[in-house]
Image (cartoon, rainbow, N blue to C red; front, side, top):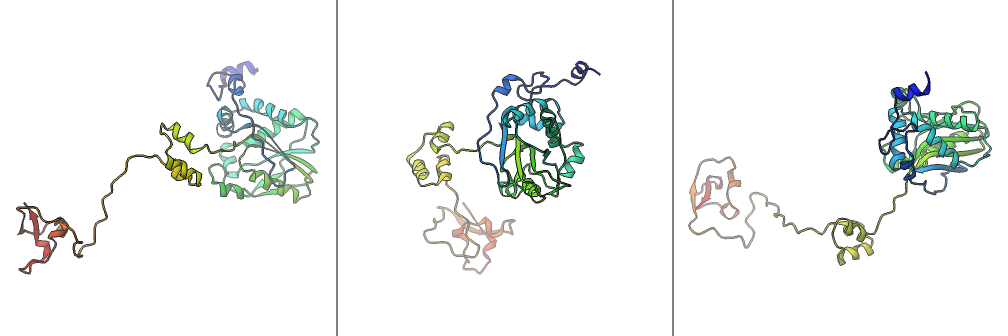
Length: 302
């Protein structure tokens, strides 16, 4: 079947604007992609390369490859990843970060393997599975502390001297670090990491800018809190004060001093057992009467 019939039967759509595009990402949306942030490589890696920042249309394209088995954006993303990796880089083999066994069985493919084999065809470098994963919990959705621990890997077979590890996204770099540690434990001398995207670094904006975005002018109190480092108090919205009712006193205690007197014309009359019992009485009426009746048999009424 020719490619024309394949594109007609299974059309590809741009991950950014939704228009029909055979590459899976149109030129306009690709131009808006963020560059990869410059960060030092994780421990165990000699170098780390990335093509984009993980946001916008690139994030959607990676998600379609990873969760929907979309093959159209692979060639475009690998092309830009190839441009990020220096030409003539000496490599013996290229491998990938394997997905968990549960995810591979559920999806039927490994997106890291798709990216690694597509890149190896461009450079003419052999692609081999050199890592096995011993962690069933994926990195997606985990907190920073769990991400820093990273998954566990073991090296498979004979490991070459220089290996390139390819993955889709890196946040803390713990996955690449653990993969490089496993390869070096089997004699690998040089390990290089490459990811399609890298998570952008979050830079908190000043409190005054956040207040202006909400339409609230920064107050001297919020500015002072920001200077002292109490950002939580500085970001708090200066809304109206809320007057909360004081907590109710425990039953059986005497009313505190200064309790309001009974209203004029109020009388204490006996009554039957009410569902609320003494809770229906005001505090100033919860006293033992002179006739010896229990306080629960009286209510205040006007």
